[in-house]
Image 1 (cartoon, each protein chain N blue to C red):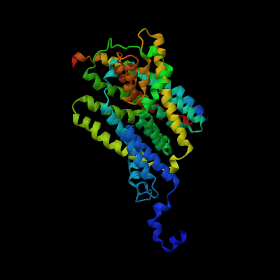
Image 2 (image 1 turned 120 degrees about the vertical axis):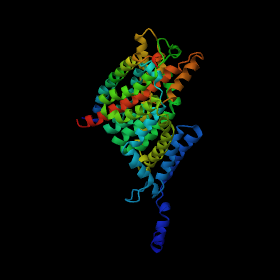
Image 3 (image 1 turned 90 degrees about the horizontal axis):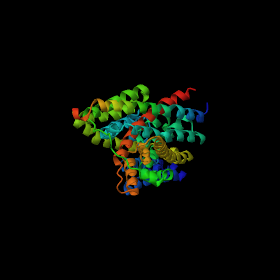
Length: 386
Length: 41
């Protein structure tokens, strides 16, 4: 072959794709294919896993022009990465879209549900500790823990700042586990609750309807308080609440609709394929990635247990009992977690409708996960100085 | 200071801080809800 290349030098240029091919590229094609399969066949977060899977294939074709880093001839995935991930723009734009889709009314009617969401962030911190035992540095371990927020954009935001080299696997783990909420949460909840607890009914006493003025002022209040406590969280929570203000103001329906549809779709599309573009074989095919996937699952389990146990502890001191399953909805996987828990309650007792309460906690999870992300963002540089 | 110690300190500081912030949200949301009842819209 070498003599052929010497004799016909143009062959090297023509065959460089084939000559550069290795088994690691083929493995990455299979991984990309698996993500696409999960998206298409099982509807697992298709809007993200499909572009991520395709991006992974593009990034693992030898000498792919899509991920070329040659100055002046950068691939489009590199350009998108620099334009939207390296500067944290895409996750922030996604938050505007999520905010415009959120209805905080169930949370405002019963604000105490936010405490469950706070408890359900336990997995973030427990997993970060666990990751350090496995040899990860503190910034990397914290970024792995954030998978437990069940919040893709927050995971990407934190990773792009403190664990750039792990961005691909962290994003894939976050979105895979978010789509696996119906598989992960029910057995964990069953393991830590009794059947009688799962049958607890919850009423709507003393829950007043929410005025439009309150719905409009709520996001502004949250962003000011969260921003003062953790200025680093302003980009995330500010974008989330900006989207919500667009919706609740009632005067810019066109902007609200744009955020919910065009912006959401466009950014999701470029975000997914760009993350896929970071999944090169040399970054993805290593033991660390296996550990990250395992730790991601641990984070989800700890979050679920944290939320449920917190509800059980409250029940010990309260006359008005809470169905502890709603504690598990404090993760940010919205509305999937709320629906899964409501379905579980119906399975135990077909006349027990807790969906409103579950969705309230689930919406609170959106806020709590961003607050947790902001605190982690603040704590990493502070502790790294020590 | 080792990575594990840092992670433990993060949990010890961030988790209670979260509850304080969320507690603040709960109180302020209750006040807001009371100040602007639905009938006034």
